[in-house]
Image 1: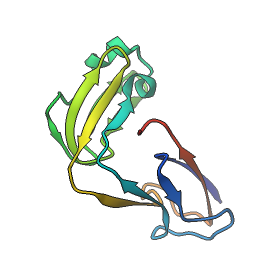
Image 2: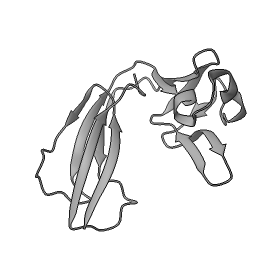
Image 3: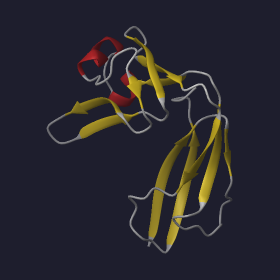
Image 4: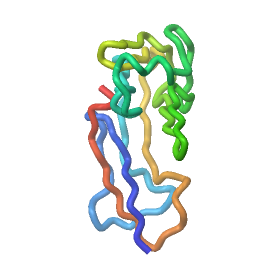
Length: 138
């Protein structure tokens, strides 16, 4: 059985596996050095709404403290729910309703983040990964 997983990486991420490598759930696929720069998330693009319309879906407000994995915004429709989670610990710095971007000020300490196989994937003989460098996180 073949499984494909799309994993979005920041531009400063370093991919640690090559095509054809055998991997399992404990394999570290990529590593990101987290800098003290703000993290920017294009909520209007992810939620597929106009920039001025993101206020309906935002769950956090400026100056709210957030942890990695906290829900930042959620859009519910009849069939689906789109959830945007925080990729880092920090505080919501600003929400720009002209561009649809939410900015997060990271905690001041520098750290490194390892990316592994998603735990919600079912067991598979072969796991193909599509690692994407993205401008969602700048």
